[in-house]
Length: 360
Image 1 (spheres, helix red, strand yellow):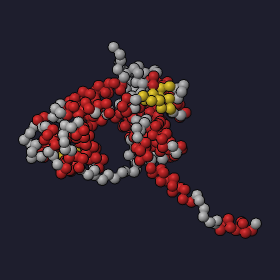
Image 2 (cartoon, one colour):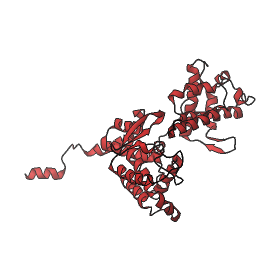
Image 3 (cartoon, one colour):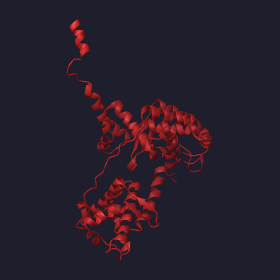
Image 4 (cartoon, helix red, strand yellow):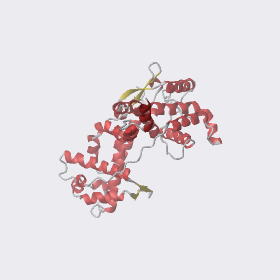
């Protein structure tokens, strides 16, 4: 039997989770998820399923028409009868709501936008397939969204972060004990994230055979299952070489033999573990910025754009499907460059230059 890759294992796990979520929805929801399967990742479909569960629970709990109807008994024709005002009430509801376990959840602009986006996708599918003739979601105005300033590390902070990973002198005494055992691995992970801009999911999914030291590249699995080669520089190479020397001496747990980065339990390191180690080291460097693996990705993208000025190259290296996503993220750099250009063109000679000419 062929051994399953990390990404195949994740997809299988997500498939079971998606089935569990869909089982709580009206039966017609199954056709929607089948319809979007080829255009979305399993993670995206799970996110949509979570959002739709919230929507149907809202209808059952808050809407007088649907309170007497079990969620599984709701029909498409009943959904078609909702008005734009009903959808707006739902968006107001998700700002603060309780789940089935009475835990309170909150959503701000970004979360509300995602809930609306999930609902738009759902209704649009049935409208395009002529299962419904009226789409109330299309008549809802998109809430105003205020873009947050993208947090990145500056050059000094980036250098301090890597030094902190290397020496750990600002860690607590308890953290220093673990640091002695994970320093080389942590430095390889942090250097790789900062030096290539790969996603944290791509980082933890790396296998030993995905590293090509001869050509200075790693094979990563992008969203949608696409495999690409991402190239790295000398600093990343040195960090990987140090770690691989250590990794080759470790006997991994059964089934984890191919994993590049291992936890102390000798299993493939997880996304949450990498997020925690980034947080641990970055807090010792800056308390003003909430640094995550995605912020390290933004830092790399910023540095690459500043050095090359090529937005299409940045989009390609980061794996953005749409260059407009990249442009939106790095528009602030263009603004900085425009500010720097304000004094480049001289309209009149300054007094010292005029004095030199007069004397000559």
